[in-house]
Image (cartoon, rainbow, N blue to C red):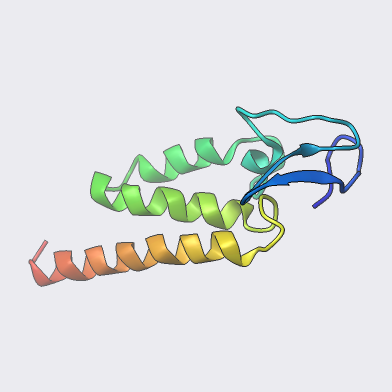
Length: 107
């Protein structure tokens, strides 16, 4: 993982979270850099999620939102990409099961 501010790759790791770059000591705990990955590098994934989920039922949105979140950052937040991909898969499987149940119920 490369720091966008200094191009360094010396991050402090606490459990599953990478807290900040040791080289330049920059960390935005509210809006970290991985929030803006996957769209255009400037917009936050949150804004994209809101736009996508606006047009779908709430129970489906509850599964779509984290799926998008984890897919958008899987190469940026954790040193091991599979961490977020497994989380995205879990939510996607839940969404699939929800839609199968709705279809069986005639919804």
